[in-house]
Amino acid sequence: MTTRGFLGALVALAVGSVLVVVSFGATWATVTVAALSGATSPADPVSTVALTGRDLAPLGATMGWVGLAAVAALLATRTWGRRLTGALVVVAGGSAGVTAVAFALTDAASGSGDAFIEAALGARADGDVLSVAVTAWWLPAMVGGLLMLVCGILAVAVGPAWPRLSSRYNRAGAGDVPVSAAATWDALDRGEDPTADVKDHTHPGSMEGPNPEEKR
Image 1: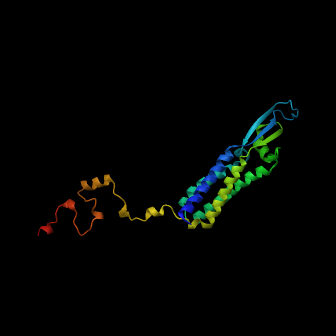
Image 2: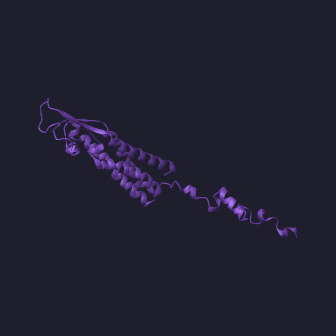
Image 3: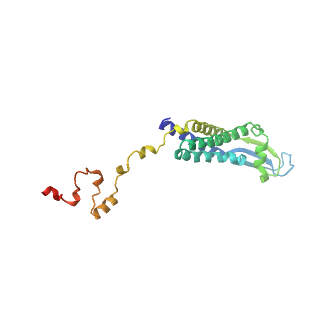
């Protein structure tokens, strides 16, 4: 795969991971609960609790950070390192996407409390759940998880064939590295010619003056 394809996969993975991080940090559900346990009358006081995706599924929320870390890992590894990283991304993306879909298909999406809501509320509300309003933030979480999943599959399948972006900087020999100005002045102070390594060795260095052999 070309460098462009590799960069495309990295960008897609980064975008998917950011989508997961941002969407899980947003409000997925707004729950209206009775302020007092056992209260059922419409006149009874109620409270509203906003639940983010992180509140509803803490494990799924961490998967975006796994994807962002995998971007750096894919740049730093080769062959089996990329395959292992890709497998981790498959698990992370699948977890985030499945979590989002599971939330959307549960009773919470139809307006009544379910395991997600009950677990997230915990001790934050003593009364019964009266209604649940679900936002669409689970959708970008699902899309981000899907992007991560696809990129992970690509890394497992063709990751070792991806180019190493730093390889083109290693083609030149050590003698091709430019000498800094400070190093040049240090060489001059020592009486050395800082350009000697790039000159033809058949000609003496000019810093030492004319070759005595030439005067004869």
